[in-house]
Each structure stands twice: as C-alpha cells, then as structure tokens.
Length: 409
Ligand SMILES: Cc1ncc(COP(=O)(O)O)c(C=O)c1O
Image 1 (tube, rainbow, N blue to C red):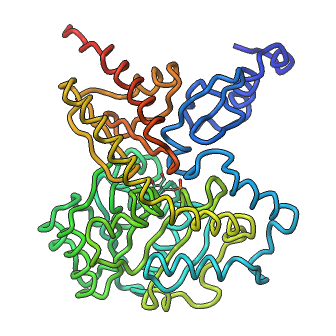
Image 2 (cartoon, rainbow, N blue to C red; image 1 turned 60 degrees about the horizontal axis):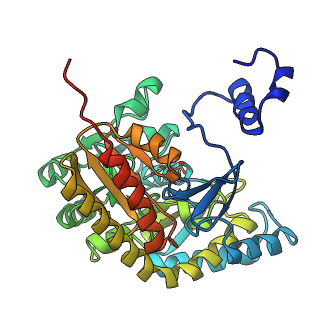
C-alpha cells in the first residue's frame, strides 16, 4: 500500500500506473494485473516486453489486431489533415461510409455515434418517436446486454446491471430468448419495438433461432412496431458474415440495427442503421452528438471495411478450426459442457466458474475473458491464424488439465 503520492515514484512503471489509477480513477473496473504499452498483430506486449496472445481484442474491438499497417497509415495521414469538423460541416467520409454501411446491411440510413450504448440509446429514441406517446413498451430478452446508459440498462435482461439504478424506463416486457410462445404473448398494441442480439455476447454466446427472428419480424410488422437488432458485439464480420442475422435467418431484415465495437478498429465509433420507415420518425433537431462520425474514425472505418471484405473467408475458416480444437478439448474434459458460437465469436461453457482460467491464461501469455460466470469468451482479432489458435489451444489444454474439482466440505 502506497501512503503518499511521493512514494509513487519508487514503484516500477506498471505499479505506478496501477497506483495512480487506484488513487484517482473511479473504481468501476476490476482490472487484471496486466499493463501493456504496445501491440503488434495478434499480440500485446507487457512493459517487460513479454508477449501475450490476444484472443479477446479489447472485447471485440481491435478487429485487425494491433498496429495494422493500413490502419496506422490512414491514422497518420488523417491526423496531419483534419480530425474533427463537428456536425455543422461536411467532410469527405460521412457520406461514403454511410453508403458503404447501407450497401452491406441492406438498410437505408445511418446515424453515427461514439459507442455501443450511445447507439442503443438512439435506437430507443427512434422506437419511441416512431410509436408515439401511447406505445411506450419495448420487448427485451432475458440475459441480454445492451450497454450501461440508463436507456440501455433499462432493456438489459440481467438484473445485476439494473438493480442500483432503479427506477428505470417503465416496462419492458421480458421474454426468454428463442421462446416463440412468450414472444407472441408479449406483443400488443402498446409495443413500440423489440430489441434482439442475434447472438447474445455478454450473456454467454447464445445464438437466436431462425424461427424466433422470423416471428419477431412478423409480429413487429403486425403491430407496426420496430424490430431492432443489437449487432454491437456480433456484427461487422465477427461471425464470418457481416451480420449474425444473415447467418441465422437471411430472410429477416431489421428496421433498425445498432453496431459499434470493431467498426473503427479501436477508435470510438458506433452507428445506428435504419430503414426509411424508422428514419422517418426522426426529424431535424431531434437527435445529435458532438463527436459522432468524426473525420478520423470515419476514415479508419472505411479502410477497415475494405479490408474486411477479404477477411471474411479467413474468419470462417479459422473460427471453425478454433471450435474444432476446443471440441477436442471438450472430448477430454467432461467439465466442458458446450463449445458454441460462429466465426470468431466463441464461448466455452464450463460446469464451474471460469474466472481463474482468465488469470492463469494471463500468467501463461494468453488473453481471453469469462462472461456469465462460467463461459470462457474468445473474440480474437479477425486476422488470427491457425498457428496462433494452436498456441492458444495448447495453453488452454494445459489449464484444463490442471483443473481439480474442489473437494466437498
Ligand atoms: C451486445 C452489446 N450491446 C451493447 C454494448 C455496449 O457497448 P459500449 O460498451 O460500446 O457502450 C455491448 C458492449 O459490450 C454489447 O456487447
């Protein structure tokens, strides 16, 4: 324990970083004891130059790994030209990027934001504005996660995120994922919309079923409500397709889709995509944001989308390879209950808590995390190769072999 601020100077550099955070940063995050200064490809480097295989990519953000040469080049070029214009003026990339996003989503209009939660918040406003004051109800799914702002936690189906901030938005109507009877029972004339993650991420990598998405589409049409897909974690190539719903039910199109994480490869950027029907609810002056769609993030996102086109086959191939390796481990260890996911969005469900594996993974130079207590989550960079996956599997195999079931007291 460091008692005075002067004593901070006597600590090693990483200890200093930790100590300063302890003194001055709000204690919202339980960080792991790892400090990094640089990254290259799929690896992060500690201050002692120790190498860590990054199979989490900043929780699904660093889609092209670290210091990708083409991204670095765009950032350098753009930094020397112009970073931000505000939304009062035009810049080169807004229209181009919006057009590209519409082309890959089949939707019609884009609003640029800075994060997932901000995108979700905007989608809630669109649902409200579209439905008017008499239809405030949103249908949301148990076990879902949509971000940490008040609107987003209001429709997040995990009580631990909501409990300290109530009362929240009134409602919503909670239904279990993939429960078609519950879905049919939840829609009524007060419904403004339904929000669904194609694959629940934070909730433990749980994909939706095709019929569930189709029924949601049919009922949203029937009640003139909006079907909103949260593609913040499972979107923009993560599953080996641009969007997880294209994989699950290609015939289903949302009215609104929000995404963020990988879009600008580590720079803050989110988007709300809508069809014309949903966009018509928002008139000039009804919504805005200062930083959203700034020049730098937009230029990087355009470059990323160019690269992503070529990467989709690799995401599918390496993702399947990774899951096959994990299934081999499952065959050896009965405590691995399930290996699931698509592309490079992968969950390994254990019959016991997974947190210790995360710590031991760091000790052995491999980074991943644990969600929903028992699900090890892997969201590697899209550039990950079979060779790097082999390295990760080797360490995981070692960690699983070392597991000892606790003796009953
Ligand atoms: C499905 C989903 N929605 C929303 C969010 C919130 O995004 P952000 O943390 O960028 O606000 C996340 C973040 O993990 C997410 O996974």
